[in-house]
Image (cartoon, rainbow, N blue to C red; front, side):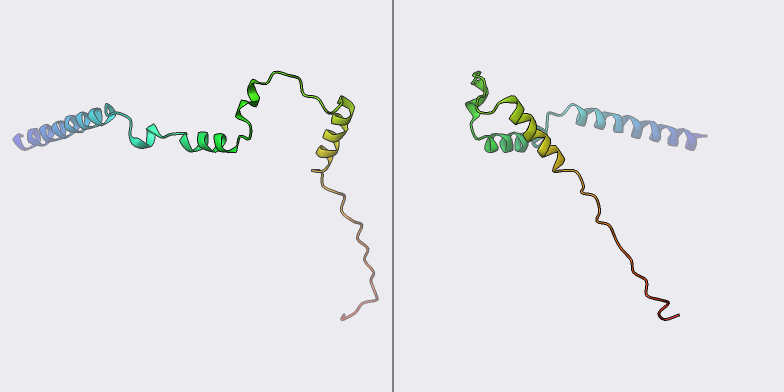
Length: 98
């Protein structure tokens, strides 16, 4: 009976110790990896932006009328469609090899 009580106490002690360790690890501050999360994506956006101040320009865009822009967009969309496969013709010449 004493042996079973020792085992139960040991299991309870290990469980309590494990919970304390998990609690302390969970309360730790952010790691270096967590602090840098998203930095590379933000840097890529900044480095690929040609005119960062262009977002503040509220003047309307000029240079192409609506019909031309619509036709251009339709041509662009159609450029992604698959062309029809060419017709295949088969010519059989008797029964060769049979």
